[in-house]
Image (cartoon, rainbow, N blue to C red; front, top):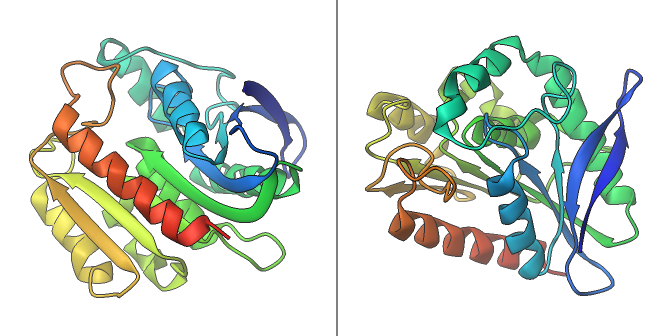
Length: 236
């Protein structure tokens, strides 16, 4: 089952979040953070795959303050997407992630365990979620970041990373040079609850809807690791 939920923002107004539900009464929750292409077929498909694996999924529309329901299919809309990112207010985006977190916790389908996963822009948002989103003093229980290009500029947040975290990077990513990945590993990789995986792939290797970027072998390996990670840390 899938639908859209309406999430109340902390400062007034509301925004959409795509919701995919598993075939069970209650289950762990996962927040799914979009790529720069918006909540498109790829993100909706990933939400449905997570739901099929037994999770309640919410994917918030991070661009709602700029253009609600902004959506582009693939790399052909890259210039428009990059323009959206340039307008993104990261402080307000972080607050919207927390609002979505609270909404998910309040849903009757969610059993109270919540994780997060994001891709591209969403990979950075996943890190922001892990380091800043708290609802009544609690944060997420597990977070996965796929090729988040802004994380190396946010390593001052590392001390606020309190949950097990998994990072996926492509070693041939033209948008994330090796030294930036190395900086993330130097700051976080020595922690027992943090794992950094490398793949022989480029950027957005998990995006099946962008053929020039998609790398099937890397995508399936990373997806299996993601499901195992959530299965271990979110199941009650």
